[in-house]
Image (cartoon, rainbow, N blue to C red; front, side, top):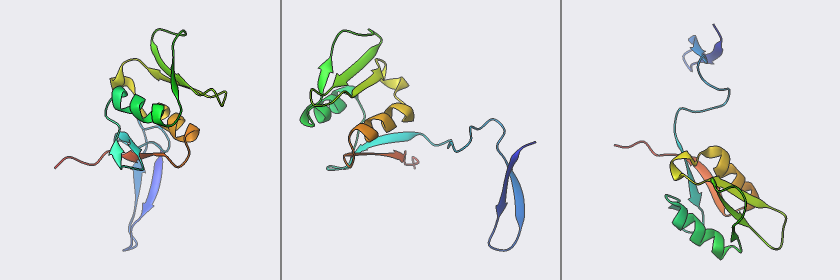
Length: 112
C-alpha cells in the first residue's frame, strides 16, 4: 500500500492512500479561465474568439482529428482534440504557457 502521511493540527497523523491516483493529480475537474473577463472557456467557439483577438489563426491542414491554431509571429502551434469533451488540463496548460498572463487553469467549482 502506498500513500502520503497527513499531519493534522491536533497532532493526529493518518496515511492517505494514493493508489489509483496519479501523483499530484486532483479528482476535481479543471477549467480554463480567460483572465481579463474571468470567463470560463466552455466551448471551442468562445476559445476561438479569444485566441483570434490574441493574434492566433486557425490552422487548416494537419490532422483532421485536431483543432489547431498558430501565430505568424512565432513557431507555436496549439493542437486540441476536435471533441471538446476531451479538452482536459493538458491542453489547457498548453494554452496557458503559450499565452502568459492571459489564461489560468483552476479547479472547477463544486456544484451546490
